[in-house]
Length: 406
Image 1: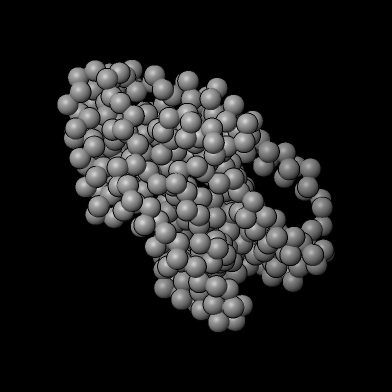
Image 2: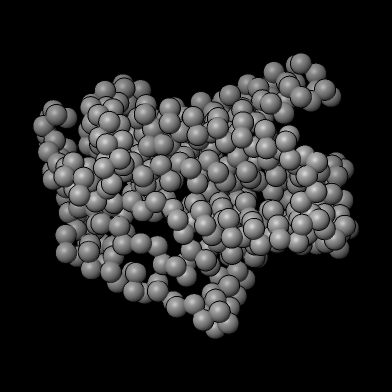
């Protein structure tokens, strides 16, 4: 966010806080957040069906802020502020990028594979419907937004991607727990208590932090259930499909991912959640390419990794995370963008996009600008960079672990 935009937002919120009654807050004080413009703003930029859906749903978000603010003020403490702001990280895409590979290095590749599908499509669907409906977050003020990520504040409200992720992961862990015959009931109950704590911490935290209302949480939970059940059903029905024998499978996977991204719905106001969709669809496609490669060429890869003691696994974590960090933060961006620009001759439209966004902000720094668009080279580049993470995990880290004698 630019300094002009930050100062404008600060002035608006400061002035709005002087109003004693939440119902007295007028639209001009809130336009810095996406989704708060008058209905006419959306009607002329949406199809009739899309606008009708938004008009029906927005009635559940326009009156929620006062009640949520009362609940927040009743339960708020400095300790809980710190707790819920930091535990929200457990629903971020960076957290999943670091943690999703860990079951692989414990010899549980299938767990990571399932979770990638659940989380990838939870993020995509929640982002798609956020941009489709353009529904606002609960208004602040009267709520206080408690977050370590100002990026998240710029997104629409419903559905909640945190809730979608938490629901999908929690249901999956419970499903795995009660399919496992090696754990005693005592340890199953302990694990159930831990995953329940994780779930309710994330979900209640979204309300406590002033980031989401009930419609956001319910719609997010529905998406999480759909993605979890869909993943398990597809896994069951496609269990014996020999996809590794089909040469066209990698091409289909890449093109399907690009189709999902380039035909993603465009929001009315500027909203950054599409970037997470690009990242996770890239991860899904990278997983499919890596999995296909291992089966097609009889490359054992991660199937050679087994649990062999806590110290040994810690060593694998160090080697594995190091490989991922080297790819993601050191090698990927310069290599990928150089190839896209110099080999494939893709136009670098990042500066044009940034200038247009800055222009719109300068024209009116008191409201969220209209959607400019995501640079095409960033869609392709980010897609490839994140596809490289599972390829690194599946094909590179097993060799690195073996070379390190682990």
